[in-house]
Length: 123
Length: 107
Image (cartoon, rainbow over all chains, first blue to last red; front, side, top):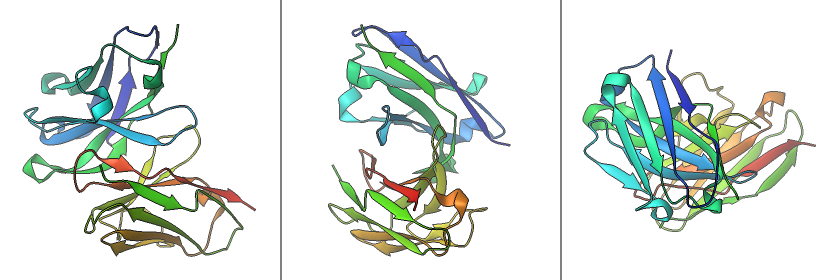
């Protein structure tokens, strides 16, 4: 059974940093590309970043470029989101999800999602 | 960026009704359109990929159609468990974008 479990969400002050983790199980993590999607309270879904299965390609929404870094550790079956220079508008539930297709056949349809972790940026 | 506009944003319907949600893209996206269902406090669930491909385990009362710039999600006969928020998403090019959502509530 595919499982994704996010952790690391917390209350942080504007300008602060936070590192989110996504622990994966139930599939061969190293062959799947992964994503972070966020949802501000009472709002819709916003894609944040993708990382290719081999870690060699990363994509970001403009609003987080230069502040957030997506990474992965296949030995630990985990993905991460390092968030720096946090802003009030980054407040959201952050979901990790798996992209469809393994290896070079990946595409940005998100077939399995974690339960999310809440990041609150407030003074 | 490719903008996705869903209509309606809110829909009130009864069990057994047939409902259709529309997603319009600001530019052509071929069939690279995905539909998700989200219930309160839960993660989104993948329903339909490539505009019309029903995911395994999704009831056949759900269907999707369209290509280019206009897409629809249809639920043929609403069941109590279908009351949720539905999102479309395009995967043609970065940044990946979602529609604003359609909240489906019980009349």
